[in-house]
Length: 323
Image 1 (tube, rainbow, N blue to C red):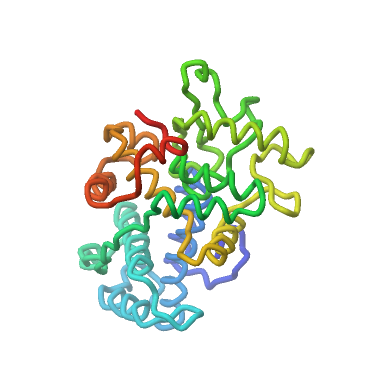
Image 2 (cartoon, rainbow, N blue to C red):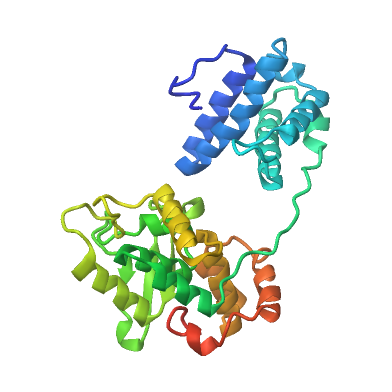
C-alpha cells in the first residue's frame, strides 16, 4: 500500500489523511524506503481493517481502545499462506507500528483515546538465535556452486552484515570509492564500508574490520569471477544482474537444501557477533561493527559466547578478525 502515490484508492477519512501526513513527515525525516514500506504494510493493515469492520470510524476521536483490542485479536487469529498462525514477532511489530502512528496523532493535536497508547504489546518469546559451528560453516561453503554464493556467505559471516547491506556493497560507490577499504592493509587491516545509501539500517554508515583472507576473496572475485559491465554492485547473480535481498534469500534456501540443515542469512550475523565476543572483541567494537544503537541486543551474544561451542577459535581466524 502506498497512500501518497495513489496506487490504492481509499475513502478519504481523517485517519487516511492523518496517515498521509505521518508518512510525509517520515519521508522528510529521511527514513529509509524500507521503513516506509514497513509502515505502509503494518499501519495499512490496521486502517484497511477499520474501514472494513467499522466503516463509521473515520476520525481519530471515533477510534476507541476496544477497536484496537478487536484488531489485535483479529491479527492473532490470522494465518499465513501456509496455514500457520502469524509469528509473535509479526504481532508485536503490528502493535508497535500502530502505536507509533497513534502517538504521532496525539502529538499533532488529534483527540486520541489514551487507553490505546497504554495497551501493552503482545508477548514475544525470545528464541535462541541460530548459530553455525565451524564445521557447519565449512559445509555451507563447500556446498556453494558459484563464486558469488561463496563470497556472499563469507561477507555475511565475516562482517556480520545484514542481508540488505551485503546486497548494497559496491565495487565503485557514487562517491568514487569502493566499499572494500584497503588503505591500512599493510598493517594487516582491511574494512568493509557499509553505506547509509546502500542498505545500512537506520541510514547509519559504518566500517567493519575484516580478515585479509576475506579482502583477498573480494578482490579475487572482482578480478576473476564477476561479470563485466553490469553496474557497480559487487555481487552479481547467475543472470548477470545484481543480487537483491530476495535473491540472497533464495540463495540461502538453495544452500539449505544442499547441506540438509537450516541456513538463513541472519544466522551468520548471530554467529559473527558470538565468535567476535569469544575472540575477545570488547562490546563497543562489536556494537559499532554490527550497527546497533545500544548494548541491549549485544548482551545476548555475551551470554551465548559463554554457553555455545562453535569450534576451535583458531579455525575461525580465517573468517572473523581477531582483536
